[in-house]
Length: 299
Image (cartoon, rainbow, N blue to C red; front, side, top):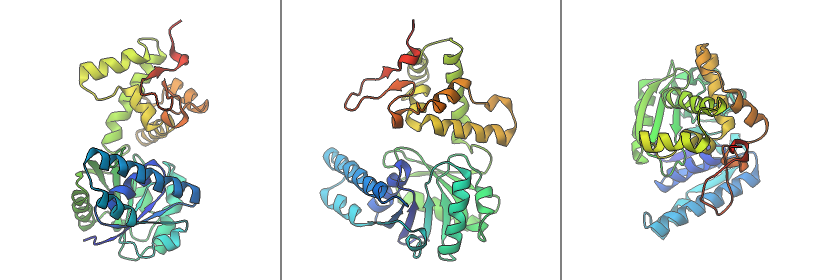
């Protein structure tokens, strides 16, 4: 049973969201990133999101202050995980980076610590293989934005113990999340279903079957999706979508998972979606209206 001490690796969008949720529910969180500026930015983001919760009346000012007090920052993995009962890695979706991090976590985290990855597609079994504690390695895939989304996809690696799965399931419910346990195959469930849909939407645009707005509107109004697949791809990050599709393609060896050439070109051109300011839509600060990128305007 996890009592108190959580370490989160990576202070990006997912990492700061995971730290936020754990801290809000009374856990002592160490947020770790080699970039101190990124850590400062993460704390500012958490404070801003907490302010939004206070304004909405979902939390009190006292809980906001307690949440911030529960978070400390650290630039050293060795120091940051020294007392951890669970470590949640939320670094960039890059297998070499994750394997390097897990080797360090195995070396520096307490022997009884559970090592979890927020990976959205990379094999938990592969990650566990670089540690001396594969039974204590598990996937804990949060959805973005973490403070809002209720799902946690829990992924059992080949060697993950039942006790560890039960602990992470219980922990997810303590965070007021809904845990769903799946097994370790490429893309798990969330992205095995989602990414082919997004890729097919991009192919439909690439082949001139319909425009950006038409594709998204059909899925929103016809299929009751809260946002269309192209807008969702922008929100996830087109580079992340490309990375996950490559994992699916390599893992299954099936051409149906081949990334659309348009997606490849957009990522190469640096059009990554919300994070870069332009993807299938253009994102202007302070403007909530979606503007279709000029790339896709009908001539």
